[in-house]
Length: 312
Image (cartoon, rainbow, N blue to C red; front, top):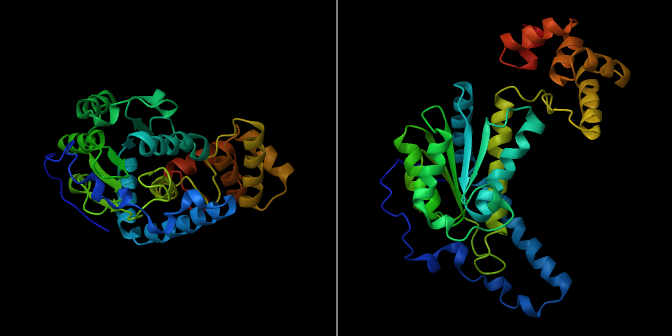
């Protein structure tokens, strides 16, 4: 766990010492990987994966501070913006695009910025991660400012695109968070909150889509999920702001309302129809014994929080 004060971006693009990083060193436990049978390879991968949760657990206090930054940003109308290259950037983009259907957020509330553009999600854009000017241009295009929080993701902790993005975000007054898988990383020195998940050597030397990727996904999931819980997007453990945009989600919304209000699915379905398909409104209607308009007004008064809307 590391907490840092922003500093100059003097380490941008510096390649010295890459081989010494924990994520780049050879793993003695997998030295004979190519001589193993299929099941043995899988057992080794699984054993290494089991170390990731412990590594994340050790940095939970830093993750909590980062969540608080995201909550504060959301309360002032700001955005959660993930920035990364390669696997790291794809993981940030993945977390961002899953927020609207899960939590009913607008697409601009959680944003993923990937070096090389969205097209780099499927096809790598060579050299994009080494271009600091591209990072600045991408954040300027988004209009990043003091209301926002920018999360820089880089397994190595030194990707030039991410270093430049965090430096720019700090200069324009945005809150900054770094997520790296090596201690003492350059991006940590640029962040208000530095999250350093020390995942160690990979199963395949330097293949950070493995343990480091898993760690980064876990952290991204925590950042967005905990922030949404803290800002009223969840009631009990139910995603009451789910958008019922397909048959599966319509069925889920009905079950969410039935569970939250302790009613049968027929009554839940009727409430959902009266609430124009919005589960949270339907839940408040049933628990508070009111109509849809009153339920919406209650939610508006209490920041979208179901518990307060029902009792207040």
